[in-house]
Length: 187
Length: 185
Image (cartoon, chains in turn orange, green):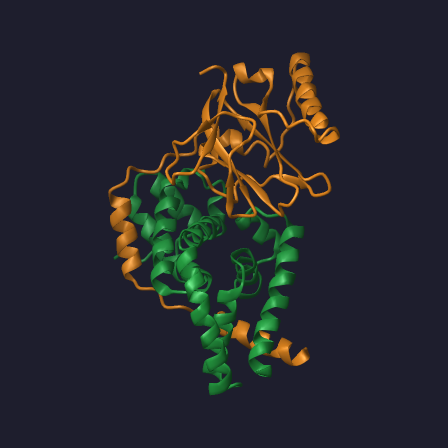
């Protein structure tokens, strides 16, 4: 085994050697960039998205507390009674005023990793990982979203695209994959 | 060509967002080879890797306003590349399966040709890598070749640290077995 370890270490050293990439990549990228509009500056939506990453003290009205408690209760029901499917994404009453915390839940007992991907995070798999309870097979994440219509899906184990089984679907996807639709604030 | 090698990532990002798209070239030049190495190792060939690289940079440009910490542009763009490699890998899975047969032949050839030589080892480890499941290959490369910490890996893959540790362990064990098959042949 030690001999195999040594062989593997020598092989890894070879894999670390630089790879020569054709300089034409620069030209092709910059040609494509020249045809695109300037990238948008960070939006209020994006700043809302950083709320969970950079928590700050907030003052809440009792109605918001009640709404948040209701959202937690939905999640708790999902945890306690697996015979009941988890609810569609939960939106609190705060949705009327601005970004509201939306809880996404997926039951995936065999998954080792699940991410939430959607037009609100530019479909980037690494942007919104879900917290998993491996024993329960339950994956949860809460994302603040302002009123609007969003498309989203779950990415299971980095490879399997899964629409939310408890939300309306659309086939309007750039890659032909089914997505789910979430509308907040009746827009 | 303007030399932007001394300009930091955050400044280049700021220049692009302020209306100077040419500043993006500095970021492309800075990260092209590092990202390219991962893409080549992950996808197994230069042409696919360059496609992934090009798509990654274009997507990064379009989403640049969403790069929350411009000083960490490198880690952010790495996350986009990892995602592009997964998508391209899945799209080309059929071709990849055919490639496995070639890789197996390469492994055998390497063992008979020059069991301890550098070229033989290069061929063997490349072939072994090609036989790993994509998520294991990804974890192996990020940990041992790109030398990311588990926390950095979690950032770019979206997977939990515990899941990544499991994948790395499985990948390493599998790589040892595959290389062992060569030396013991």
